[in-house]
Length: 379
Length: 224
Image (tube, rainbow over all chains, first blue to last red; front, side, top):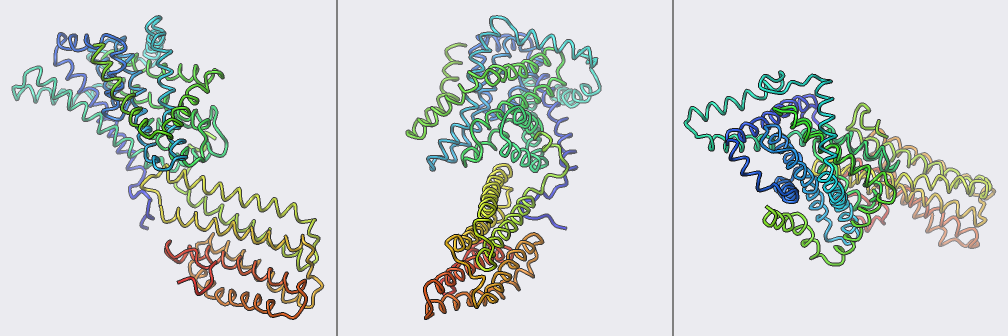
């Protein structure tokens, strides 16, 4: 029986098998990235990251990198790879992870521009998209200074990594587990191939780095595409449940589950934008789903940490999770603060509705100009 | 609510919407039966008014639910959304909602004091009642079963029914009786014609392409 129009022609089990293969490719990419950075040598990486030693510069690097690849999963996986290789210290990586959280919101902000010609719909869509921006900006405004003053996220993440490492007897170091050995093999093969071809350390490092980034980017893109197809019906059903029963903890959980399933918070939040634009989903009911998506997206960095050489890889992945959990506690659980990102988003949407030129200023300013100037000034 | 994600199956969202459409039609039939009985069978209008309004609200609520679910479907599926089916659905739920509205208009006649249960032509009125009630039920069955063959043959039959209602309205215009006799019958025939036409629009969704839907509620001469 041939599938109906709009139906997926590939059986779900084939797509799930493909996703498993893509996950392996993704971890191989993380490992190749690590190997590439190592091949550059310690002096090179030290001098590279000294430039981003200012936490704000690190934050802006995270924003810019994520805007460039339109995926916080790619950025955070790369950061985990760098930290896991011992090339990027956790304390420098923390603001970058926070920046990645801000940068990823550009996707649904861009999605909201599709409604630009219809005033009311656009106002709602823009508010729905920028609510995610403001949540992340507010969260960074609180958590970055707190982390710099107390190191609370890193300390907690280290404690959990130690506990979890002990619990599951993760083996870090050269030997590693079966998974690490399996993902190391292709990177080592390429490294030895480049060595035989007479490439120097820096060229080998650069090629491995690019190879790793391309693998991470493509694997994540195809994982997301396949999982979205497999999960579309479930996502649709879950969204319908949120529409009929409202937000709250269940909406947070659904946002989280959907994002874990498709490995992309941008997919979850971008799906919400047309619903908010159409007026069938209120900003207040979409907000907890967005927060759930923020938590769900941290699964990618946690997966990437499976390929890390040292526990620090898992520490930074856990920092990502804890940062978003803290955001949820501060900006959702505290009733007085819950409305702040929503009110800011609604205000900005009203301005954007009146002056369309403001939209360009906002998108380019927040996601490109400010971070770019920040990096140039603060490095 | 979270359980929704983990439940078995997942690709039958449009089928679920079709289920809602069938339920809307059955609710319309319920409204119509109560309303017409208040006009032709002597049921007290006030006694069924509350139930009719409740049933009508259920139809309107279902219409909004279908629309929301369609927005979700298109948002989630994006370019893979089955757009012709989505567009057809938005079109037919409007027709079904109109069936409910006309059924309510029938009740408005009873509420205005019209009682034809003792009229000389009550048998023909009861025949119209049964025919329309059965037509709504049959439409629900055809939509539920996606029975294109039955939809096609019923559409052919109903062309003549529309003409009958036009004749009925014309007869009342030319009637020499009192306005109190002619006006309710003319209005009733008009409402029944509109109900039939909207049901024909619903049925065409099974057998005609999207661009040719929605013309049966217009006069024959205006349809081409």
